[in-house]
Image (tube, rainbow, N blue to C red; front, side, top):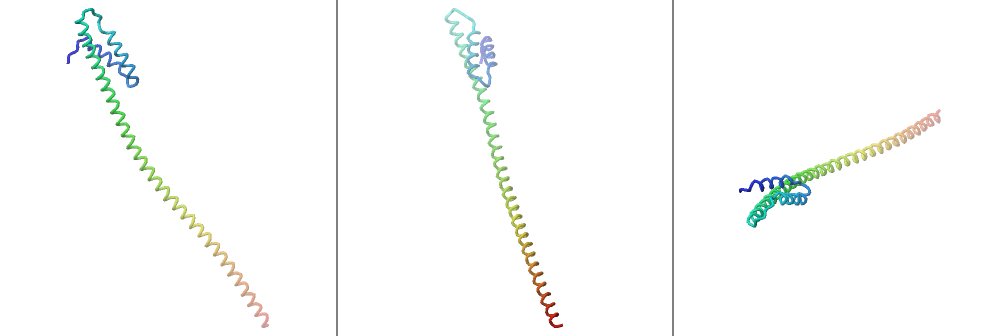
Length: 151
């Protein structure tokens, strides 16, 4: 659609004031520039034309803000979806880590138990060896006494 050049320039000025943050302030600045830019006239017909032009410029500005907000909203949604995917991957990685840690804890626990059993077996073997030496010594003593008593 066609806008008079003064309104087209006005719309360009207002659109250039769009900022991602502080949109309300930019809107107010844009409108202030719009009203300041309009030429001052005295005729009733010219005032109506200028009001229509200002309304069209304001609509154009509002559409530009709407498009900017929609674009930013889409970007936020994309980032949110990416974050959701990354959180799910992180949860899966954390669950895998827990499974691996649990497996390692079981392995080390089993190893500790085996080492304890091995230590218990070594103690048992030493005890048996000591008992057998004691018995051998006793048998040797008995044999010596028997030989000594026969002589």
